[in-house]
Image (cartoon, rainbow, N blue to C red; front, side, top):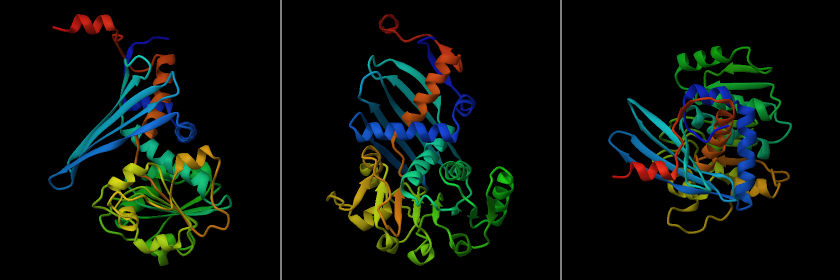
Length: 332
């Protein structure tokens, strides 16, 4: 065991984390947040050009012996990149720099898994996955981890992409994964629906979700984008977010429903509060909505697991340990 600063690659991350471990780690972190033992820093966001954006998320465990960290990333139409910087919350020393693309995909899927496990009906067996981009693979894994499904229908507007996605996961699960030629077909009969798209305008309305009991809306995280129409809220008995401040800043759906002027949002719950209180789906609820925006604690939960495993098993590139003496010697 060593305190050397570690640089951890995407390969290191995926060698340590699977979706089950990610969901359990995030659940524990959210319970700590609900007990005021961890907290987020609100997201910093800037946009420019034709859809380019840069983001920063921060978080810290405040119960002693924990970590603090920042995830920073840039997205453009030609590509992007992301890193997570993990600090010792007690000493302030940098412990790891972690390539964060896989980390981000796993935490986004894990938050859907945690929310689905807490809010979706336990007997739900039919699901729909809307979107077949890179994050769809881990979103499907999260659904499989928390519910005993019989069928998942998959839809995206590009036939070649959805067929390729279904082919890529064929035989990996005990349930059927089916391609849908239309959005309506995918949603028909689906008790759990996950939206993970880059939609700019709402494309799902209440009538399409007539059979849905729980909705994960995790694709639109910029104030210019939305995935579902306002009338979906009319069917919902509970609306839950991962982070209230990030939702206030970035969720077009919630801003249009509950206001963008800073007034209190009545009827919007925070997932960590529900988990800390051991509260789940309201009895006889028609529909629960989970709006995931991304938050620092989700990344921190993943980074902690990856770093501690890497530290104990010698993974990654070890750099000289950061000490006060080294810092003083480095000063001009």
